Length: 443
Image 1 (cartoon, rainbow, N blue to C red):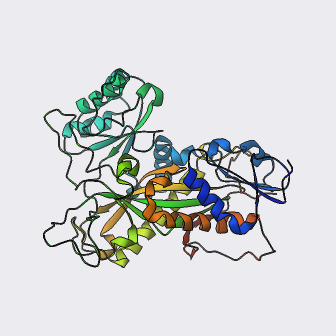
Image 2 (tube, one colour):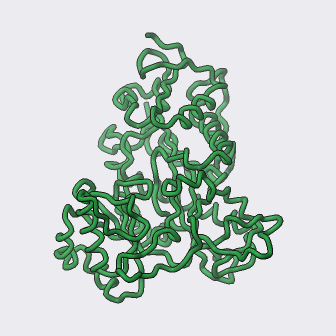
Image 3 (spheres, rainbow, N blue to C red):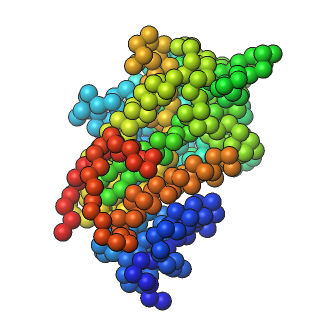
């Protein structure tokens, strides 16, 4: 069927909340909805990656706007992200990524016994650090998400047994860390893994503390580890925005440093894993807005109370880290976006929402500007927003409306508008522009 001048294809078959949020965000733009990305005229494709007509977006950039870049492995695959950020910091040693990216090693293997040879070559340096025995490390599959396959270890033998446990998972056995029986993976299907240093001094809060009233006097405070879920929007070629309503996702139990049980694989993950997909039964109980933590007690090294200045400092760090992360991705054109020409740089007719995870370390510094350090953990495409919980659905509604106003409305001008300059660092519609770079001219 022919499309109206302004049409939209919206298709999220496995994410009904996302489908509703997208349609609600488009209400004011007067679009006609299509059942498939077909027809003539201007067309918005705001759908799952697999539902998009990527070829048509490439061939008709003036009339097609898509909700995903075609190639973005440099961002969303952990092993690619490690490579591009390492290459970038090698060329730019003063980059904030030098501190913000945890020390990382890559593994590519199909069977556990391949580790023996890797200790003599690719993992020689990691092997030396494990033999020193004074640090913990995290194993993550390069292409899995929702907390699958994450394990803690501090010795070569532990890592060997973890991979052996993955191999035996097809037989119904799981020799992974305690509390991780539902997160095993099959190494022959994934192959790519990263090992990251465990960050030992996380910023801690009690998620049950009421900022105004405190907990009941008889209830002791208990520090929980958390990570920040930052919603980041990339648009065109290339602007990057940070949504300033940041979420704090807490572990379900109080924090404790990793310890080995009677069996060396008995390392409880519950104090360390903050992924909401592993806490589905809690229904968002351990999800907070980051600014809800203002006034709450810091239960890690710095102590005192968390201030608005602390929050702003962390948000500024997040913005700086994301800006350099996207610069690093642009420097790896083969793995960020479609091959348009020899330079293969981002399309101007795409935008994409990412869920970016950060850990905040408590440095213990007495210098207020250096009290906390953010660390980039991973970047997720099509983030699992449904795990946010009903209490904060309004945040997601606002986020999607901000995306529609910033990335979609200029594509569907209801009436001629004069483009206003939006400098980096400025916040509009709760989106803070953290990067504005010209990667190519489109004729």
